[in-house]
Length: 230
Image 1 (spheres, rainbow, N blue to C red):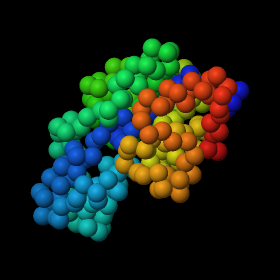
Image 2: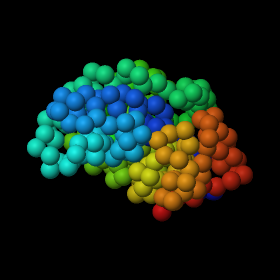
Image 3: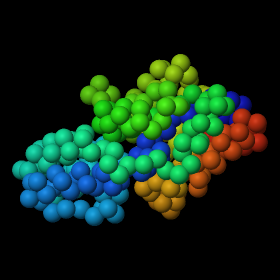
Image 4: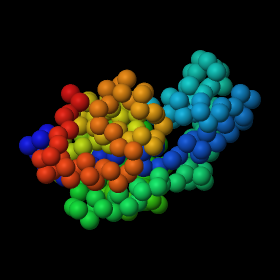
């Protein structure tokens, strides 16, 4: 990557740009409560997220898909979260400033998420006018860590993977970057800690959003490289 200029930044959403955990917990617990099932704590939901909302509910419902109430609970979750996905959600401190800096510097940006696509579109339009493309969980795409959404984002932006970097907060994001052939920057303000990320192959970390601009500036100036995870 050292001989390439980064022009494009692909972001994860939950745990990277937005703190969505409280709304996800509330939706899960509404569904569980409605179906007479035990509710989950915030820390439990933190561990459950990352592989899409169906997998979140598989982990939250006792017995997962084998529970006779599972499909009802999942439908309740989707309906509730579709209305309440922005009740407590907020952009992490420094994220709006980061995106504006990247936009002003000419970077193309996209969001790829395993969150329901309608919620991704809603949240992107509310919070991130700087972001050109947003792609959520859709029936025609395999969800992350499959590379489909990243590759579609690059196609929509008219960019190549050789000029892109992926930024996320989880093991799923690391695997997504690897599968798409992109280098990955792992953020430390999200849903997974440094030790967990190191165990899953993370090598480049940032502790605050605005550090990202410094990393990209150094890479493009030839002062450091970020190898792809493949």
